[in-house]
Length: 134
Image 1 (cartoon, rainbow, N blue to C red):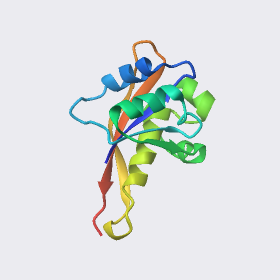
Image 2: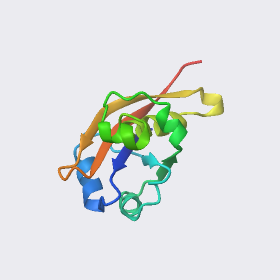
Image 3: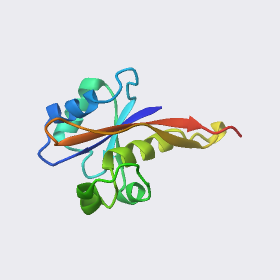
Image 4: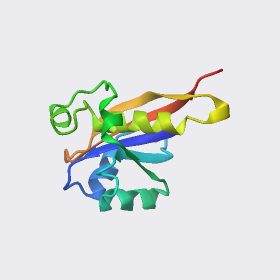
């Protein structure tokens, strides 16, 4: 499962979110969008998810801060306690999507580190579920 994680400012528009996603590899379309639980209900994100036909996965703050991310944004660290909300959300959601009792435990790998929208209002990153053999 490929998941796009999104981090964004409160004033970010759907266009800002689209622009961040446009910076990701087009040949790796996400099956879901993920972000912090408090941002998951944002109208711009919900509209984008409807347009794309994918679900929004809300990630608890504690799960986000437990992830080490390659990117280290001072703003994200100050606001969320994580280096990149986009990367952490993508990794957590992909790993959660990979868990399936009989099929083994899922882990996630980052496919694309965070990219920034041109207006600096949103970031996006991609992660994918990797199944572990039993």
